[in-house]
Length: 94
Image (cartoon, rainbow, N blue to C red):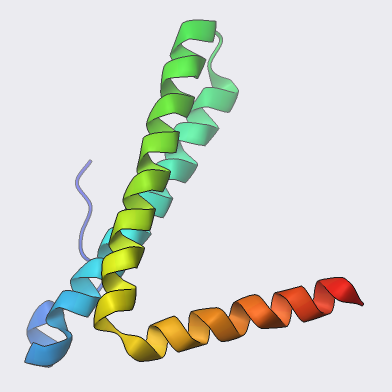
C-alpha cells in the first residue's frame, strides 16, 4: 500500500512547497500512528502488540520532528497553534 501526497505540490507557490511537504509528513505520521495502534489493539500476540505500540511511539517522535520544522518555517502556523492551546486551557478552566 503506497500513500499519495494529499496535495498537488506543482500547484503550490515555490515559497510554500517545504511547508506543504512538512504538513504532508505530519499527516502521514498521524495516519501511521492510528494504523499501528489499531493493529496493536487487535493483535493476539503480546510481543506483536508490544512492537506495534513501540513503532507507534516512534511515529509520534516523527510528528514532533516535522512539526518543529514546520513551526520554524511558518510563523502564522506557530501563532495559531499557540492561540489554539490558550483557547483549550481557558475552556478547561471553566
